[in-house]
Image (cartoon, rainbow, N blue to C red; front, side):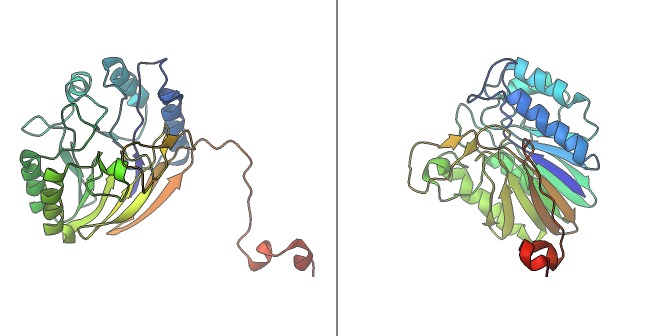
Length: 276
């Protein structure tokens, strides 16, 4: 099974920039790359910050952008999104009984669980008791699962970034919930931090994906200011076989030369040595 993981597309009202970039052009490049190279993907999963300011026109642009994609798309919301406006545009989008954008589906025997980690007028993540109860029920009633959300539910050792991780009061009980079901959770995937970060949390492997816009620069000392730059964007290709996962980072905007090289020992020898 091949899954495309995209995050933090930060769409604006068309024509408006975000961080000095055109987020619509970047997102279109990503989708074109996916359509060209990965038409066999099972899903495209976009883990939040679908828009930059939560505006209706931005969601309508997103709706149009994915309308003709031949791969089914799954959408999650992030801290830059507005849940009410999102649901007014994507008015048939699934939610849980409490109105959160929590939903799930089963793919090849694995429960793909999509979480709503958004709070009210805050960039930090929230996952309250109501949402944890919903997640517990999903995990309790499946054999294997894979979780997608926007916010990093763990601290990453980056003080400024960690200020807007899942808030402390929700972080510990969320960790306990993951730990209790860790044997059946194959992976946790998220965005939010605009960088590829990998590790293990409560016994479960995790990976965050870069943004299609600006990328963050890790700073292990800065306590307040997030650092970023218009570095090359990318998305992930997840290759899943049973409980095994391989993650490829795809740099979709490169337009320079590409060098091809063979895999024989001689193909990597210095030219004068190869001639002997």
